[in-house]
Image (cartoon, rainbow, N blue to C red; front, side):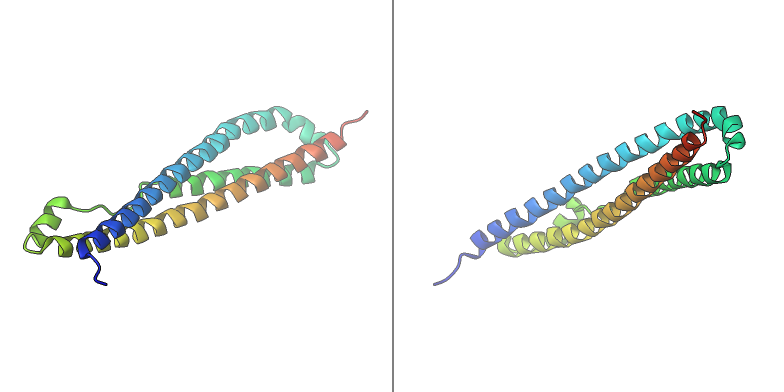
Length: 168
């Protein structure tokens, strides 16, 4: 039973192209998540700094002032780290694309099945490289989220210590 080489190439082309489009879609999703996390952290920083400067006299009079200051400072540092990592992983990524003009000039002497196989291999390599970029962005996004959570915990503990020192 002989296989039709061109039909096989068409099938693999569809698989490779769908995988490539899926990686591009994942990149857009992770970029929007990074954008939202950055917006949250950047929006909270001035609010928290303003609130802390307003509450600083009360914080300094508190019996728990070292605990309050350490936890609030820890929370702000974690938010700052989340912002820095978010900006770093939100930068434009090195996504690979086919240089159609160069590809045509390089492969115009080949037969159609050979061109199809070369196209499939090229898209497959681009997909693998782009997927690595998306995975790296995902890793740093998770790190930024971890720093946001740690910052929130630090700030919550700081407020808890501050509230614990308020006389009833």
